[in-house]
Length: 396
Ligand SMILES: Cc1ncc(COP(=O)(O)O)c(C=O)c1O
Image (cartoon, rainbow, N blue to C red; front, side, top):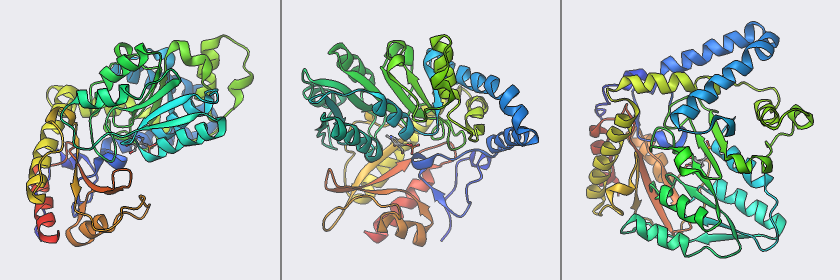
């Protein structure tokens, strides 16, 4: 079958020309130039690993932190790196001293790994996970706000709020939620795994107690580049997952914070170091820079969503304003919906094997539904969603 056209910027990526890649959302995809930059850092490190870690590492770490903080309008003193958003969420949750009866809110669109981390810490401390049920089909962001705020009690200490949800591709009204929850005394742990580069983020204005996010998704930096930002008044509560050399450091508090997070033990830090280049390089690919990239991907995701809704004989589940560059729709399912597996849903595998389409199909047992989720990134073209629609019409 003739492959659909790709976006005109697709040559910047090393994606397989034989695959229609509609899943930027799961692991991102990194342009070749950024991968070359990562090789350059690795070569620098391997030329003399001791010199690299003693003399070059901290400046590079700091420069990456500074650039990302500027991009997110964040206080650099609260910014640090982690390997992925799962680690950022775990770092916060496993640091907090929960009391029996404390409640943590988790909406039922949340990423299962992060939800599991909440269950882990509430189970071990006698606290309670409060799962907030939010329908997939909602009329407005206000519906979501009302449901979540309705779950707050005087025992609520924390809420996990996504910027954009994973299984359902819903852009959450996270700005309003953060403001309202925190004004009720509930700290927000903002899961911005789909954050930088997909939705505008101003961490100084939002001021969540905690925010973790991936750069390896929508900023397209190499895998393993993620951040954790902790608000000044909460920094004393949080320790890195790895207790390392910084723990016994006796200097000033900010220096200790940086030492503890900058040295989790020996590892390859090159992915973090590529964040500045990724921000600069992608930002220059499109006139208008990042605001225009986000707008362009949003428009394409809506177009793609309309095309597949038509093929599936369904309607868009929520307003366009609640879509970012990810969009999900239910697909017909017979029988019970089981948990997600590492091997992938059979229909996802079918689309890849028979049509060469890489698109996630997510069984979401909390809703009893399977969702198919498209992504829109600069390398995509609207023809690719038409091709998916044809495959769906032929096979469902
Ligand atoms: C909403 C959300 N949170 C957390 C994660 C975890 O990201 P990572 O696998 O990089 O830790 C994802 C991954 O897709 C996600 O979509």
